[in-house]
Image 1: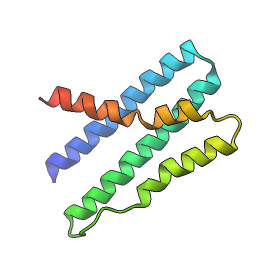
Image 2: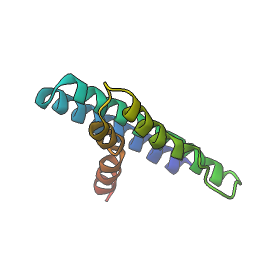
Image 3: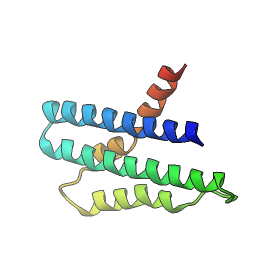
Length: 111
């Protein structure tokens, strides 16, 4: 479990780092609305990753299935982007997916 806790911390830290770099680059290249949408998406991705990690921890403690609660995060993000004019759909979805490059970077630096 200690190895899993370290991996979880590294993934969260890598996601924060990738998200911060992406938001800064986006704010320099595009307008602040786009950077804000990317930031909201990145925070949703971080929440998704955290909820997924919590669900995986429960599987390790005797539960037999992974929870489905984390699947609500992208649904709520898409609904919010559809309803709020300040939140742009594409940057929010790209921000949500920023946890994936963090996972890839972690895999590359681990090996």
